[in-house]
Length: 118
Image 1 (cartoon, rainbow, N blue to C red):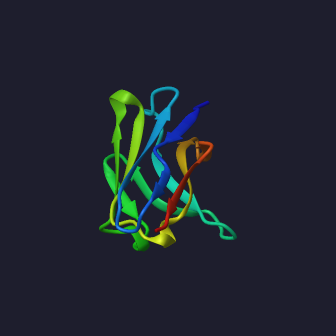
Image 2: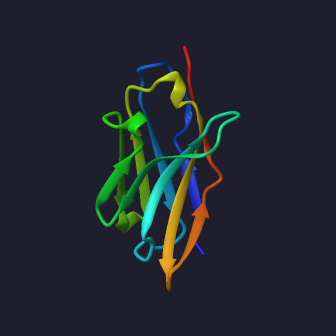
């Protein structure tokens, strides 16, 4: 079992930056992938960025603006968000995915609100 706690959300003006942090309750060494998802009001949750064994992938809408990184020594994953747009508004969730014997287990944080508005 892994507990995830997000922080760093808030209100920011368009063009601004925020850094989200996801702290895991134990080592993420056995976790296959860590990611950030977001959910805007009235919309489905969508993948924003994922990091696996040092490689990263991003949603097209955030490429070049967001950067995901991890610090395994601190059991922490970050999402640096630059050049924020109003459409980036939503609740951002941290996800940890573990695949073992062909079965995937997902762990989720409680979410942190990001609001981009002037």
